[in-house]
Length: 296
Ligand SMILES: Nc1ncnc2c1ncn2[C@@H]1O[C@H](COP(=O)(O)OP(=O)(O)OP(=O)(O)O)[C@@H](O)[C@H]1O
Ligand SMILES: [Mg+2]
Image 1 (cartoon, rainbow, N blue to C red):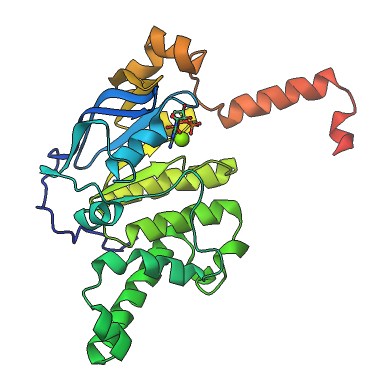
Image 2 (cartoon, protein in one colour; image 1 turned 60 degrees about the horizontal axis):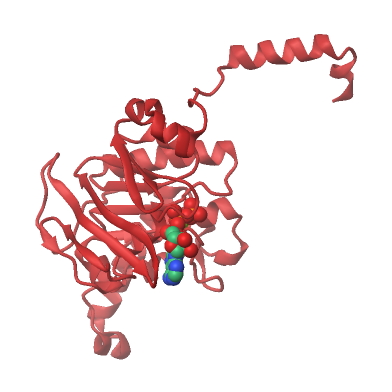
């Protein structure tokens, strides 16, 4: 993959290890319910950070606080050292892009058009230029289309550029959301359950895609319930339970923490069975149920 997805936002450039996202004391109350309570979380340049926790723990609400959809009741969110403005489009322009737990695509637009929509914060052509369709507009539009096609190539959807978004299978709609988010040329990408509804092969491909995004210089913060995906992928994992950060650390630390096991994981996470183990189990099953191989 040769696509250049380096940040073109207005925020200062970062060196590896610099703090990209710095959320401090973020609290979000809805009436009497405190959905997020005093959460600190940072993401460094070059990192993939996971955010996990039971249903209703406040993960999506925390994302909404980071992206200007909600104004936190308390706390502060900085991106590359600057306090974020409490408006979604300004947060996107600053350099944070996201995907949604409930896919939000323009169903009746093509795949390519959906990505082009994601580029609007990065195109300099103003309203009058677009209305008058002068030479500047046509040049900018051609560049935008080329970039959008590059991104579709990157996520593996180039051949479906002219399909309507609503006709894509679920897994591909999630990939399209990622392409659209990348179209704003972010420095930080927030993914809310990117593999929900995917089969194991699609999940594996998404893992590779997230690594490739990180390798292009985009830091990633990802919410997911698929623990194998999270622990394979993330440099660091934070666990939210009932709105509070319970534990934060590398995969081994989080998997081994008794409080996390009790509140969320339930039992120690085990690696995926290898081919040999699968073959052993199948052989044992075939022995236990004579004639099974003829049923296929
Ligand atoms: N706009 C809102 N108004 C009132 N309550 C809300 C609002 N948004 C979220 N909540 C509540 O905040 C809590 C946290 O919800 P949130 O969606 O952030 O959880 P989550 O960790 O993303 O869960 P899941 O894993 O199921 O997606 C829940 O009790 C939810 O009902
Ligand atoms: Mg959620």
